[in-house]
Length: 205
Image (cartoon, rainbow, N blue to C red; front, side):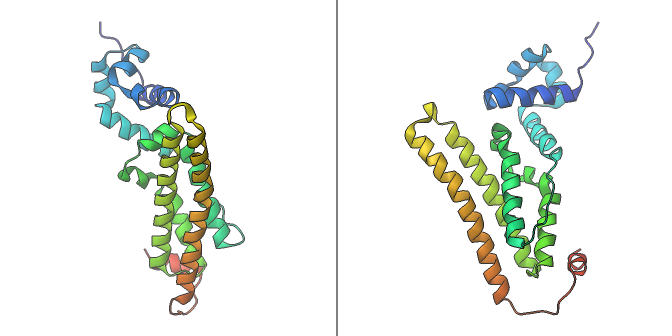
């Protein structure tokens, strides 16, 4: 009698546990199937090949993230803490973050849109607001991946430790420069009749 299939969620949960503990090599089909006590055929039947498993695992995890948007007293502070919160969420599962592809970034679209709306309420032109938020996403994700790779350097030498510290320090500086540059460009842009934040957001739909 054929053995009943195990829940797909159980496969993804165990795959993430192995990834966090052992890194990407743990996602090999034979390794995961053996750990789950199922055949590789059953594994492929339920979650597809290794690439499909990886993409689904990344999408599943980030779709479950509870990235709460908090607007602060200034837009600059809002954007900075937005970037730091995204960084912390990505760093919580560093190996998973390293496996992200460009398309996987769509799962945080709602979080990005909240920052765009805040920028519009600040009076930043729509095109500039969108480009700024896109830049903050890319810088935050790429920085986190670079940080993860640095931490995987063998034996964490003194030189590696120093470089990791520099990366962490530079992240805030880069975010600050982006925000300051956007503010400067926004101030230089031709003035337009003031509208409420809600009206501005509706205008882009």
